[in-house]
Amino acid sequence: MTAMFCRLSRFVCLGTAIWIALLSNAFAQLEFDTKAKFAVLMDYQSGTVLYQKNADERMEPASMAKLMTIAIAFEQLKRGQLRMDDEVFISEKAWREGGAASGGSTMFAELDSKVAVEDIIRSIIIQSGNDASIAIAEAIGGTELSFVRMMNEKAQDLGLENSEFANSTGLPDPTMYVSARDLGNLARYIIKNYPEYYPIFAEPDFEWNNIKQGNRNTLLDDGIGVDGLKTGHTESAGYGIVASTTENGRRLIAVLHGMSSKKERSEEARKLVTWGSRNFERFEAFDDGELVGEIPVYGGEKPKVGLTGDGRIDLYVPKGSKRCLSAKIVYNGPLIPPIDQGQEVASLQVWCDDNLIQSSPLYAAETVEQGGLVRRATDALKELAFGWL
Image 1: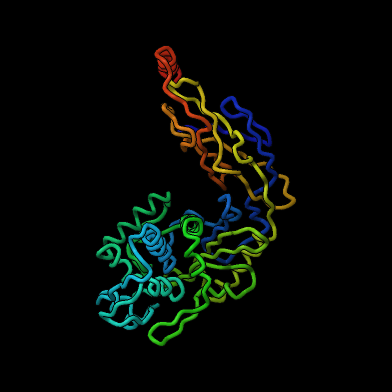
Image 2: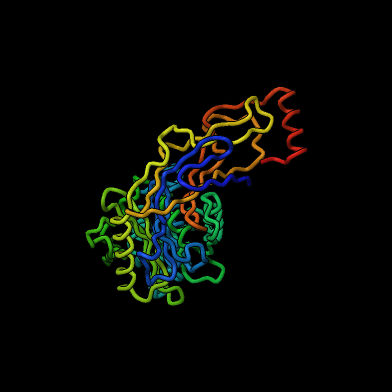
């Protein structure tokens, strides 16, 4: 991994002028604190982290692990491998480990019954049904264990570096863990990729087997724009929530965990999303198509390739702050052609002090083919003499 660091409001990276007139301490930690043991607040559009507390430490996910179960179910639906009107069998495992007899969250599905996928999904999201989660896992993976492998493969695909799943429900398991940042990024993935299903998270209640249960996310009724996603609780982990709000015209994602009660969970989550909605402003770092920088190409017809974002690159920073950020372009080098226009080849990492607050993918602004023999020989000599910078 190769990186070039850049500091202050104007800086040069790899011979290309890049500037970000960012004024802030993006965490503003002195302005906000929470009783939660773990917390992250991020801007949905840009991925900017506005607040963090133990964001990368491992924690027990509780029922918030069901977000990964739902993500895989949504993926299957979008691919046509699953349909809303398909029926899911309620096995003895689903009934015994996740049903009424288990004493946990349940949809009260009957043993050996069949339930439509649409109802199963609503139960998982609204009721946090453990029986529904096991049933959909068995329907998709054949067994819950096989489904768990799918969960972990998806976590790797999404770059969730501090997550390991052991079941589809979030029931306590010593080998299972997530981080607040990973849960935030998982929520961001769901909102971005499955907008047709996301409104289910805001539904107020769901009834099955003549038993109506309200949505566990009490912030939905607080008038602060919250429309998802998932709560969680176990005795060992405490109370947690992954919430998203669109108050003041932009979407934020908040993750808080390790609180002592439902009341504290609601109060702390409300404070965090309200603070984030009202105390930050958007900064346009790079326009759509604007050159962010250049990185060298080993043995290419051109010595460097320009980099752009996927659309505009925005950051959100605290209002009225006067502290500069730093940034760096990071890529795996040497970069060897051919390189296609639009190919992801690097990332722009933005830092506040020692904290990474945003990593935006960067793409090749043009196609670079392999160079001639002279170019390749010259680059080989540079590599031999100086290494690859």
